[in-house]
Length: 246
Image (cartoon, rainbow, N blue to C red; front, side):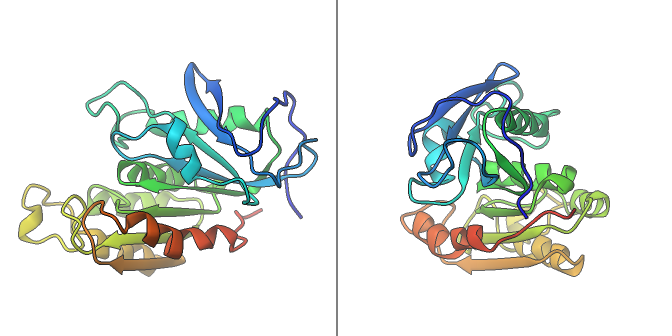
């Protein structure tokens, strides 16, 4: 059965329109679909979407859900401090806590099914999604990401896999011509000697027992077919019924 609770501080909303809220002084955006129970009595699946560098949560929340979906969408603003303004950066201390603070606040306003919370995103947002899910695995049912990587070094991923509370579901799309996140890291990653490439890291996750669905398609880091591939290959898994463990 769904696990959630009637929120302590429900807020008015318009289905299909982005709603701006705040957690810890940082903005996050919520999109409730038409199917969401406006009386807040029904626990509902949530997909948290993290944008890539230069993205804007106010716009990218529309990549988290849609008017005719059955799940809530949320997109938090990235931390502004650090070396990469406008980007999510897992190396920035507390970056995962920004996400978790927005989630905690959203639970006070909407009835979220706490066993059906998913996270994902594009590029640096995907990087942050993996970091957040691996460090708070008990919270998440799965990750759906594209054109990103689970960790910036293979040794880091080994540690994160070992420390994850459970082996959550993963769906990932990679582009074979992506020079930002190369499929295979040989000469192209001479400046990142601890990184073996996207394909290697998903093999590591698969070998560790994570349920991984991994797609490779032609394309660069971002091009005209990126959204189409995402919608056709990755997003259908939002309806797979994944649940976090009891």
